[in-house]
Length: 287
Image 1 (spheres, helix red, strand yellow):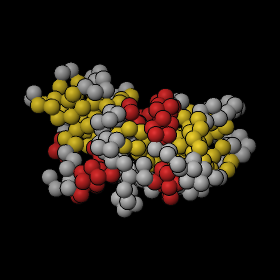
Image 2 (cartoon, helix red, strand yellow):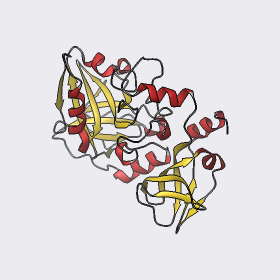
Image 3 (tube, helix red, strand yellow):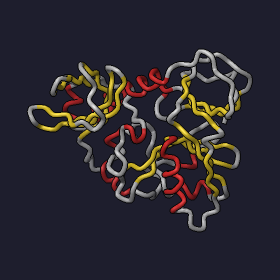
Image 4 (cartoon, helix red, strand yellow):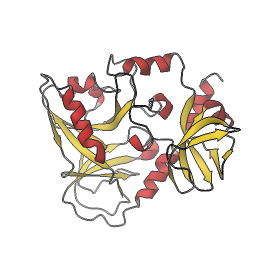
């Protein structure tokens, strides 16, 4: 992990919806390795890991970043769901030599497009996409960062890249990782061995069972609420996810995404605007 000091006027964005847990103890890596979708051993100084925790049936429960910090792992997660994540992790503790604590009062979470060389904190590249830049954990209480960017700037960039924002975009206990691009965003390792929910995740990958993907859409009209079914000629072809102004995320059938054609329903029109990585994926998948 890179250490920074002093102060700067770098354009950072505060992410108030993010919180931090600390996992310490001799078994911290082996404990998580059998529970999450990515290789925990890859969480080394300077290299954060993006991973998900699933139900035994392979459905989404939590997503988070794992950051090595001395003899601990920091877990950057959804702030308002961190107690649920702690509870679920403790269910698997048994005799594992670990300690889990809430660090919400110790850190604030920020995003920045470039490395912040003059700011105190722990910085790491966002492993999901180079376009998302870096994240920075700053100790509380902290000095005010002048000229910080509004959360909407980060949120619109995230949406434009087709990146889900935890339970805002993935329904708890129902969402499938591959439908939400987690495999394309470096959130799944296929060769690390078993973890909770691994069987369904691997089966959907190797058998090509996914028929929909999360994608950015331009919105003409009022943005539909999260969870609104998207229909065409009376047939449901997808579902709306989060949005910011005239840009949103929608879970849509692959044939709709390949054509990148507008979909009109009710008083709104959604037009897929695919990021490069999703276009490459669709070119490789048989129609």
